Amino acid sequence: MFRYKCTQCGKEYKRDEVKYLCPDCSKSYEPGMPLKGVLTAEFDYDLIKSKFNRENPDLNLFSAVEKKFYPGFFHGNTPFHKSERLCGFTGFENLYLKNDTLNPSGSYKDRASFLVVAEAIRIGEEKIVTASTGNAASSLAAVCASAGKKALIFAPESAPAAKLLQMQVYGAEVFKVKGTYDDAFKLSIEYTNDNGGLNRNTAYHPLTIEGKKTSALEMFVQNNFKPPDAVLIPVGDGVIISGVYKGFYDLKMCGLIEKIPELICVQSENSNAISNFIETGVYSDAANPATVADSISVKTPSNAYMARNAVIASGGFAVTVSDKEIMEAQKTLAATTGMYAEPSSAAVLAGLLKSKTKLDKKKQIVLLITGSGLKDTAATAKYLNG
Ligand SMILES: *Cc1c(COP(=O)(O)O)cnc(C)c1O
Ligand SMILES: [Zn+2]
Image 1 (spheres, rainbow, N blue to C red):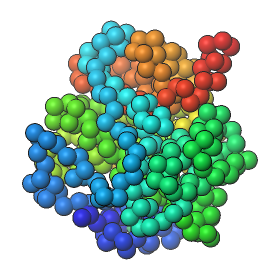
Image 2: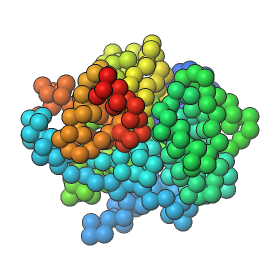
Image 3: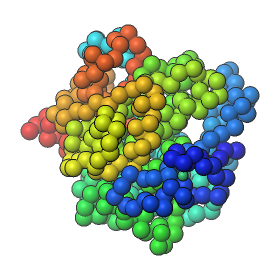
Image 4: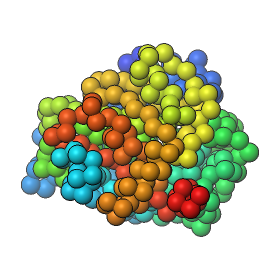
């Protein structure tokens, strides 16, 4: 059905031959550095092409897990539409929104959690473990609930209250980490190394990237089988942007599109490791990644290498925004479109406003809105009411 390919050495593996990273390249990996040997799934693109039918497009053709293993968790297929009012406000003439706030757990992460839980069903694993700034965990907890699986979560105790409550109400077991997301990441990998269970950590499990590609496939269909010109994406660990790239890459490999959209990496000024890597070619951690946009607050982004390659290969660029710009954008987005996005997602509008000289006003540009503002009302309250 597909083979795993190492994004670093190019070595290929059969589907059940490897579980997480390329065994060769990950030998030199230690917690606290971007992951080495992240795997990507290479499909039989001629076969997909021969089966793909525009009259009745079946995006499951691109899935790395067979439909019979899917949990009953209905996500994705989120609205994709133009916003005339946001065009009027920004001066861009062809501005679109992909509204992933409407996933069941309120964020884009449902796409990845869904596929990893489907994989757990396929291989008969009962326990799924993840580290998370909040959304990956609340999402995993939700999908596990729908499948009768056990979710085990390592999350910083500073995660927004609504996200922690979500994990609880969905029935996950939560270890609150006195530390950062990066600390939680280390602990969760130690946990699965010692105790087993399937680790869903972003990029560490290759199907997180596959799960996060589906919005690209959807946009292609929703946009009348054409790719948009550019997509602005909020970037923390760099898996959403790599996933969106992978979705368009798959379409290109099938001959269904000619060009991958320019992918614009939007980060917080404080949590800018990937942007900095894109611009300088030299990797360094974000010294102090604290930002109001908790979902994109990462010191050591796990998928830094792949994310950088995605941006460069697509002809895109990186832009960073301040917390003040993010919160202004949250208010603007809500008040012009009716879409209340969490700070990380509002960052893409702030990024657009900062990229006016770099982006053609006539081109079709998409803002990927990854999470709901209701997940962190405290941040909004603080900004609106001081
Ligand atoms: C996780 C997340 C992001 C960032 O995705 P990465 O794959 O970590 O780059 C952006 N927005 C929201 C709402 C998220 O939950
Ligand atoms: Zn390798």
